[in-house]
Length: 188
Ligand code: URA
View (cartoon, rainbow, N blue to C red):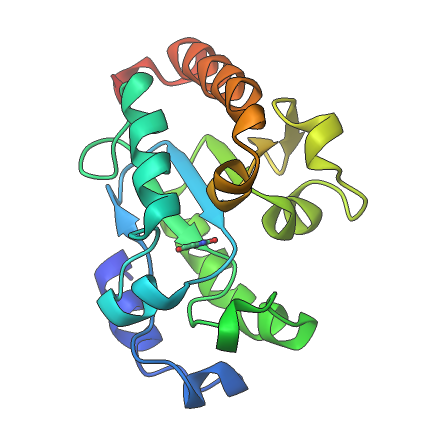
C-alpha cells in the first residue's frame, strides 16, 4: 500500500467522535520518502479548515526553524499528528481518540520508514518516548526505539507562549541536523 492509498482510506475515518466535528481530516504532509518524521499533537482551527498540519502561527514558526537547518515539508521531511481530526476548542486529544487514531500513524510510520522521529510537544513525546516525559528537562535527547531514533522538543505553540524557550528549541534543531548528517546525509 502507498501513503496516498492510506490517505484516501483515512479521509473517510469514523473511528472516534472527532469525525463528527471536523471539517477536514489532516492526514499529514511532506516527502513520503523522508528519513525524518515530525509528529505534533492534532489539528487546530486553521489546520482543520485547510486539511494540512501546522499552517497557523505555530506552523509558520516551525517552518522558519526548519529552514534554519535546511529542512522543509516541501523537500525532505514528513509532518503528521497524533490525531488527524481537530479536538473541539483545541482541547488536548482524549486517550480514546489517540488510541483510535494510532493505527493510522503506525501505518504512516511503517510506510515512510523514517530513521529519526521528532516529537513536537508532550502529547507525542509521552506516547513515543516515556509516559513521564518532561519537555523542559528531556528535550533534545535522542533515544533508540524500535530501530529508530526518537527525540522530543518544544511544541511550536509553546514557543509562541514562551519565546524565552526558542534558543533551547533551536539547539535541538541543530542537534537534529548533526544527527541527520551522521545517519542519513541523503536528506541534504
Ligand atoms: N498543532 C499541532 O500539534 N499540530 C498541528 O497540525 C497544528 C497545530
